[in-house]
Length: 136
Image (cartoon, rainbow, N blue to C red; front, side):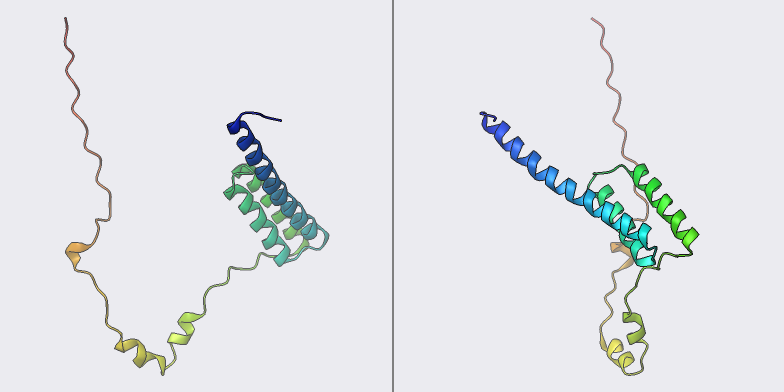
């Protein structure tokens, strides 16, 4: 058992991180096994999502996850399962109705002057002049 205050804190942090990491890895294994038992697009999506979360949390390396996702995709292809496309908001369909068109026209258009827009490309940073060497 550590005696120094910083070592005690470090031990508490290690325990908390270890529990979190083990939980994420368990979710990855559960999702992967569920997909392998019964390949579905929802199962594949869930497994991919869990793997992406592990990369985001820096628990697994990017190439490791890419390899695992590739293996899952191969199993899905052999089983005839396709990954479902991402769902998008259905708000644009509601705006196309004739009743909604006049309401949209009443809103004032917020436009910025052309001079206030940010430049499209960043300028290169200015180079500092090289200091002259003095000989003694």
